[in-house]
Image 1 (tube, rainbow, N blue to C red):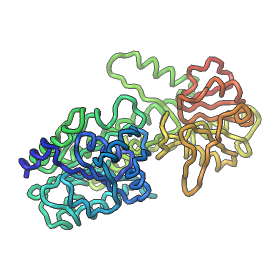
Image 2 (cartoon, rainbow, N blue to C red; image 1 turned 180 degrees about the horizontal axis):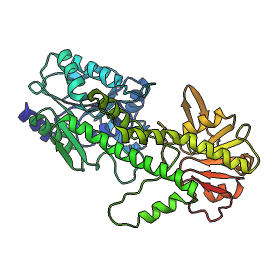
Image 3 (cartoon, rainbow, N blue to C red; image 1 turned 60 degrees about the horizontal axis):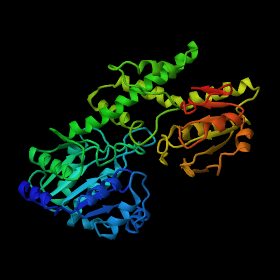
Length: 437
């Protein structure tokens, strides 16, 4: 099996399948197809499937012309029919792994994908889970489902591994193609073959580890590291305010050290598909071993508290103008979870808006990237334009995303009061009506 698959990789005769055509799956499918592999995308959402088959892109990190060209050349297609799994030699699972209402891992998408794949899995196929999850998922959950559903033996009839997605929406330097990849599979042969597959497509280094669990833990470490450090600066930001010190200036000074320090910045909370969620996967799994991840849980508590803290600060600012949050007009600038993208998954700005509404504030928002969003079954629509009248009519403007295509000098000039939670207005000279987090 090893030699057959390596030969097919060398001759570009592998047919690729990608399950889940979202922020991770579609860019991966495009790169596989661009590398010369006929690629089939699988998704349960018919709307996404139709858009791909029409050559219409909906992911920021995918070049529109690349997608259309690949579809027109019949190198990339999409389907809701999982029976086509029988035709593929390599299949990557790139489905969401959110948290449930109890803040526990929801791996139902991973499980259902594995069950569908198992029905049609054939010999000499590579299966790779890319979705972020807790250590042990590949071996404890995916392997039994695939073996039972297909009647095939892992390592003898098919290869199984884990290679964590590393997608940073909006990153102008690192995309799917040039970001280093980690691969951990069940058995040395599986690791070698799956790594060879990725090396044939990507420009970034492919780093091999000895098991899927190590690769799964590695991904959790990446984002837990960031979660903890952001929690640290958020807590110090609250302390610095009490002490009359600018945490933003403190960080800039610390950055002058050429070693031993990496800058992390405060904000209204954590957003995105990884950093706010991954530590919960680890702390949940740790309890199976009677272990409590106290440092991780402390940082999560701090970061989860930040939207409420920002609303408290907003109330204090309004008090200086003899106003209460209840009944005040608050304009939120930016609801995306990071600058210059249209992705609002887990964005702390959504929670800020929710907390503001709880106080009775009249909340509107403007985001040039996110025209509308849904949060807890409620639909919100962006103001169509950032006008002088819109700014002047707001009792408070809260900056919750540092988009670079916003004229912050214009905001400062016409706003009554501004609460900048992202230091987006650091280049604005007139600062009498601006307060930083």
